[in-house]
Length: 80
Image (cartoon, rainbow, N blue to C red; front, side):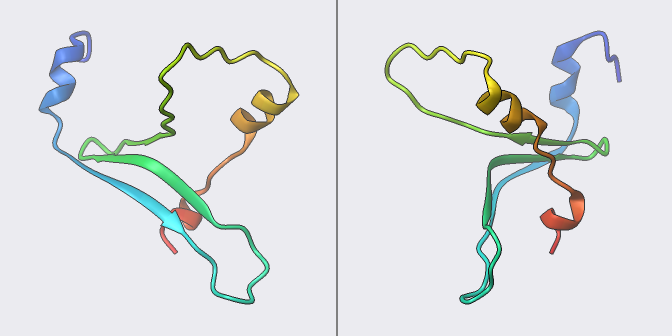
């Protein structure tokens, strides 16, 4: 594969899906959702958050957005 050519990435076989975890009733833990997961045969997993807006969107860096980016998701949570 020619990694210097972004078009060659389309040659990697992948499976796409969404994912969500809803805890059982009475369990005191948060649920989670991933809008779009791309599981690629080159051993890469892309996790995408998607939003839809009809107007202009500006994201300003502040404590809230910085904390969102710093949150981590571990593989054991994905494959429960």
